[in-house]
Image (cartoon, rainbow, N blue to C red; front, side, top):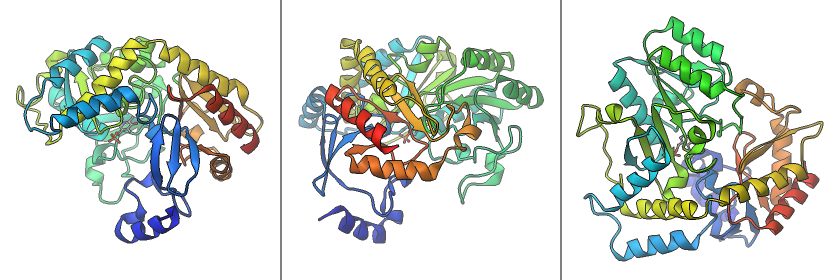
Length: 413
Ligand SMILES: *Cc1c(COP(=O)(O)O)cnc(C)c1O
């Protein structure tokens, strides 16, 4: 069956025909039959070079042999026990070792779960109510963080979804990215802030890159106000290097959330933090958190294989950087748009200057992006179908792939 027929069936039974909104490409999304390395094969027989990489997890590309082997070995032993597994202390040691200042970790099944638990934990630890997020920052699809970005810096949050209580998001404050003064003035006025949660590099509207010293400044401002700092590194963790943005920029948060890459392509999330905070998590403390699939051996086996591979091939980050820089140099900005890159995260924004925050990202010409996206797909390149999503390069992208991407960028934009 072809993509058009599959979607016609799906839309009757599944809202919008998809299991996650960004996938609802018009007039219908392509359905994937298989994937290997840097390439997706659609049910319609098209081969696509993948610059979406499942929105971030697939840093080693599709069906990487080391991960496949780890999953296969685990499958032979069963894949869900409802008991502790040896993988937990093994993976905990690896992840904690890669994040200086983080002493303990709890494994969950998605990034959304990780941020939800981290926020609850911050409130439990500080005994304070409010949280601060950054406009345009995405932390998953749960109530407290689904706040329309773009409302004024200190106004109360407005829910971004029907069904989210205004009372609840009234406890979510927002500040613009790259604006330490806005944070300082908000915290000076609101003594009831438990935590600030931030993607250190905005990935879900980006990449939008931190100004020099921005992360250092928010670290000292939050510390001065006794506000916990949560780095949501679900995208940047193991993407910007081992240790993610916190190691790259040398800023230690109080809590960290991870996901995506640490599952090797299987569902996962994790939150990490200082011992005195993490010890409040149940059953060692009063902040409740639980999950049937948490710490499941299949995701942990895939995640351990991925992180071990990254440890054994540390030069992969230089190689990713080189490949993505080649794309940047091959299609640098022009009058219509700007090319932004950090490591293997990149994007062409339909805005002449690189955006520094959400307000500026919103100025992008999304109609031009849509035309560009369609042409890219016809040229055999799959980039995320939104001007607001980051594009990725994986270790599986060959020089020929990079050349193909550059040619397509040049001719399509
Ligand atoms: C993807 C993402 C999440 C949500 O993770 P899920 O596994 O999709 O629930 C949270 N925060 C950031 C920064 C993300 O990129």
